[in-house]
Length: 303
Image (cartoon, rainbow, N blue to C red; front, top):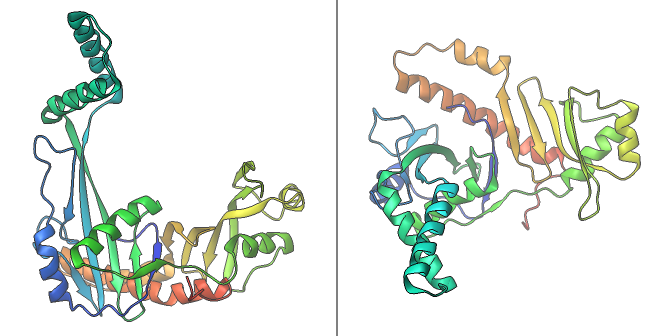
């Protein structure tokens, strides 16, 4: 349940739906497995897993959601090979070259014929809404995956005013200065991993792992104009993560101070443990997110 990535969005209007109202609106969009001729299926499933029917889980005002996407797997090489054979066969039969439209239609026909026999796989995407803090947080490593969930939720609710969070200062400039000056805020410890990019449009990228970022070779790259677009840090001995130029958080880990808090709480069921984990995680992030923005000059409200 613990989020490994944070795609952070600011709700631009107060989220007024109660958990029961939200549950009711999502009911019509429950996940259904792909039919034999569907390429993919997307819908809501219980955050608690197969043993539960409820589509949301709320704790202390935080509301957890889980979207499931099932996709059929059709190897491109197989489709292309079968399409080429079909095109050749038809062209020989009719003694003419097929048009681009006809070739496309043949390809679509082959995909349609293969779909019922295709393997499928499914992936879950978790997110939670913090109405009081005004956040929507998606556990997604890519903006595309986060936007897919948000677009689906917006469609289900009719509207969902929000924007990706942004800061007054550019994270790239701030993180670059941290390394140039070998200094960072007191609660931010710079670790041993970063990604540097030259400012030119097609500028080169340098990835450093297990590297002393205060070393002269790193400073040389910065002195020639390269900027920090990703940086591994630890915050307040509580969280470790990589922050990027868009304030997305990757490879998030909740450290011992938090895990000890979890271990001290006794539960008698998987659902109770989920509730404990979610409560501790969401409360921790409610403290972290304002500080994250503060570190980068405060929130850019106009975003």
